[in-house]
Image (cartoon, rainbow, N blue to C red; front, side):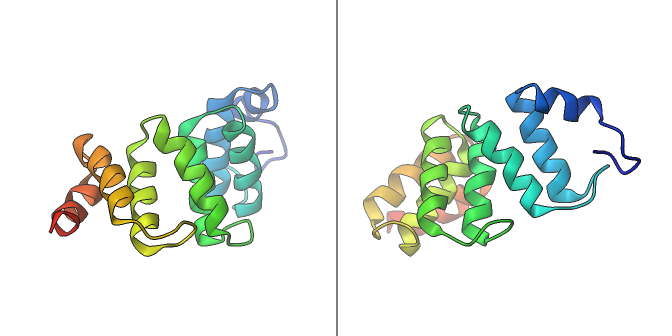
Length: 138
């Protein structure tokens, strides 16, 4: 619902099952844009889109679990969703998954797996991955 109580075209599309609209509505709730800010509502919409295999929503859902925003913090769930998005080529998810392997949050530490995912993200131009990569290669 918008702040005036009416459903926006975005909300209507999201309710019809449009994954991109669900993701966008999740972002709107996350940032409080044209709706009241609600991490819980953001997660709800990300979940709907993620369950349809929409990689950006999978990444955002992973980030919500990683940071405990709108859900109970759960590194295992974060890695689960990062992995799904990373396998679809989402560079931010590849970086996040690589960092999980570096830190051992949600997975067993593995420099080799970290290097694989960070390299994939760096090859796509992800700046964070490009900054991490040299230290991993030492």
